[in-house]
Length: 579
Image (cartoon, rainbow, N blue to C red; front, side, top):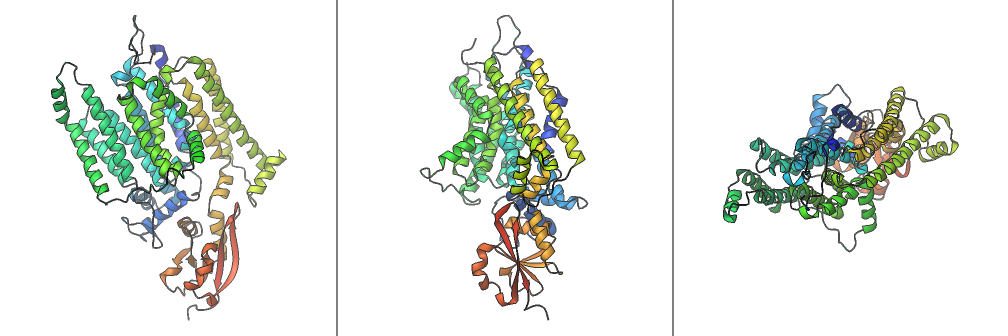
């Protein structure tokens, strides 16, 4: 027995997770959140507004702007996807059309993660030890079972749900990072590599797509480290009897490493040469909010981070092997970027596929007591969450219990609940499926290697689906700019032309889409045809520098009903209009 390999797995433990069940898992996780909801504040509706501008031809596709304001994101690729589908599908609502490519990107991330873990588990160093009298897991069956576990681990991550269902560049980056890991896992096969040109092309496309999704420096560091790990792996996999110089020469003449390496060098040179902006890593380590960032790490990556740490400990003698080195490097790059980023949760999102891969390799080494502890904690946690969702929904519909109903009325004043038959049926079926799965998990397939991640993945999927069915009207009311935009539209002058001052890109997008208003910025010059002025309170003190205040009379203050701190001021033109 190899003391460096802690994986002891029998053939009975690698029984296949039914493909239909796995596909239903993915469908139940991907579709809710992309169907039936409005764009939410702030990043979701902001990105959607850029796509609308592109699709309408009001901004360039290489330099996207919203009413003349440049978009903060450097990469235009995600906006291209949304705008393209809005143009291709004019017969469906624009927000739904824009979500279609992002739903496909989430599906791509899940598929790439499965294949990444499958390839890594096929590595000789990752295979379980051989038994003296046989009975160990077959390599292909073992790799398939580990891939199933890795996919379940990714779905189980608490931080994946909302951010992976937005129409933002973050989802494009997540998909491209997953593809980079998959390409590197393919390249790590020194003796069993099929379709080498396709592998190099996959690495190149994923790297460039990550660059044009606004993360060139992440692409550079991630691809460089992955290629270095692959090079070390391919060098170590040379026959041991071959001279060292010959092994080095063979590696140097490896066309795959050279082709992928040249791509990264060119990309790195472009980034270092100033073609792409340097990352905003100005946060000083001494002034870092370590407490809040630490809490984010704990809940955002739950439940995979304990399993990933266990993998690093049990496989500590194989850190240079691809099944540990590749996902570990991806995690380090994303975690360091999260620590230095202004949007730490969105940066940390890119670490989840690699963390899921690491977590999968903890399963062959877990004791039965630890596996049972995970099951019981998951059962109690997600059952409790589902129960809370159902109780609050029932309180919204009937007023009983009184306290949850009063809390909803206090937090969302003006919200009128409505009963949706389709949403209720879907939520009921999902809950019944959860009950059945718990009974199935307790009574059958206790030896399956992926058993410890079935309940976490199913529980995460259940709660997300319940939120996107039972609570969707409430969430739309509280997180969408739709009510605010429609209220302002009802106050606007008949010509629907509105002058805006100091509004954010998210508010502009909401007024254009939900309100159907034609907006013009106050800094763009006189607009005598506009009979309505909408102003952000923060810019009111300097408003007289941009408009003639004597031409306008205050009409109303419109607040977001779920947030009294966010409001817009509406003015009506009383002078200076068209002759």
